[in-house]
Image (cartoon, rainbow, N blue to C red):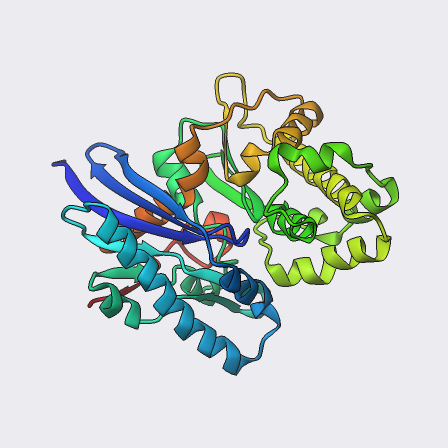
Length: 358
């Protein structure tokens, strides 16, 4: 097959609210897919946007509609600034995830803002976006979507573990790609550290200095979600209904809450890793997302799982999701499958993403 090349700008905003990730990538298709990460950057959210996005889950439909308009415009300004500051040549399209506000797939609903058709005209580019809604309409979870990239770009690993706002795992089992959310991670920790005046727990220093409350830990570990079989996914609504009430009722110091929740995360991820047969000495785990920088958490994960975990290069840790949403955009341009029903539980594999022309 003749090589086919695409240059794409992948745009991702995660539930940890650390900012918008931009990845400018060249994808080449020969016998298999290859990628080259040409440029990348994370643009931190302004304080007022962190507050608006964090509180959006509790707003009315009218307020959400206005937020969607405002955020679409705001996101377009960030995209245009990135394009102006970086010499992007022959850009085929922008592939943008938007920002998840509501995720209730069991009720047939998911909402990512910043995906209005006006974004194409505001950016004067072809834009592919809103990747999750079709999967939910087909009876799927609408998440995780990144495993298509794990299957086609990172299949030399025994498993791919992403630790962002939520942790999810992806691996190949009996010739099928399996993936699911494990637990809430940085969306909880970051909400706790902000109460101390910090954006995140750098190197896990707060967690390491705190005391783990075993009663609270057991309460967290016994949440019904962890006993559910996959496919399954999590949203901020679940965190508000299940995690925060446990931590608030415990009456612990913030430091001890961080220590207890970090241990909960490590235990839940370790259980999943130990049960994953695809991980061997020759098939390492690819760990990405901001949680990979939490040294104390990663040490506890190694101790509890009994596995040696090698961190990915920093650009892959930080920009893998933006890269893969860019790749999903390429697959959408080619009208080929970019969502796997073995992962999401949808009725079929499909090609997702709305395409808007300027």
